[in-house]
Length: 193
Image (cartoon, rainbow, N blue to C red; front, top):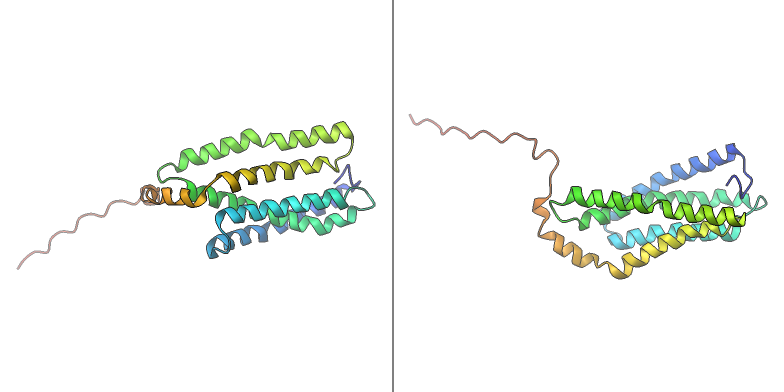
């Protein structure tokens, strides 16, 4: 935004705020999609990633210079919405596939994987942008990573089988407050008169 589009810091702040504000309805929509089962867990993640990718393809095609920078205000709400949608959708899918009793280790593995891989798109984006001096095509690195991950999810992860396998372990799930609640004292038998 600052380098490629030549926008001021004030304009960047407006774009950032617009992005964050639009993420809120995206997160609410993601929750509604899961609650109402409007889409499957896999389709919800796919929808958010596809929307994000389409937005960045649009940015690369139409928002690439100071002459076209005004268009970014029309794209950022969709990017914010998609960002707000994808995080709850990913976690809903993950939590649904975690076997009961394995919540801590699976969430730890998820966080480890996320932290181990999160640097790659940024590094490739920066390397492409710095080597060419043009961030127009470097921005397409993000959709490539997102759509690559989506392809793995879509073609190699059988969510229905996973849900069926997890079903038998759901009784082992830790329920917040259940372990902390004191056991009820046994009732004394009523005295006979």
